[in-house]
Length: 181
Image (cartoon, rainbow, N blue to C red):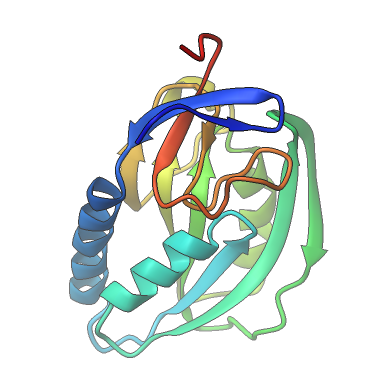
């Protein structure tokens, strides 16, 4: 892993693919244990969570289903402060055990606005699996039931996380740097 440039910004290595995948395997085992016999429904939040959702789903051995919804609040490297729903949930979640799969939770605003919508649909249970959480950025406290890593309040890229559409396909996670040398 070395410094990379995406658009006009430079990023330095932050976390290896092996580190990410090892933690996801542990989360998968926890979900297997907690949801044995319950057939949970994973709701993956697009676009960022697609890599995490795919790898997590492969680590779960119990019967489970997955669907996708698109929620967005970022433009460039900053949150817009407004949550936009682009693709709605088309699966009935009444009396279902639901696990929301999110790539990163920073301010918590997206989940703060989305969770009441899901609670209104009366799931049997509702939990959150997030690969990354920025505790320093949190303005809306959210309980993350399955957390990959707590990270500093820095802009991250790779493994599904993007900068204006690019970088999602990187296998590792990078951090924005002001000093590219």
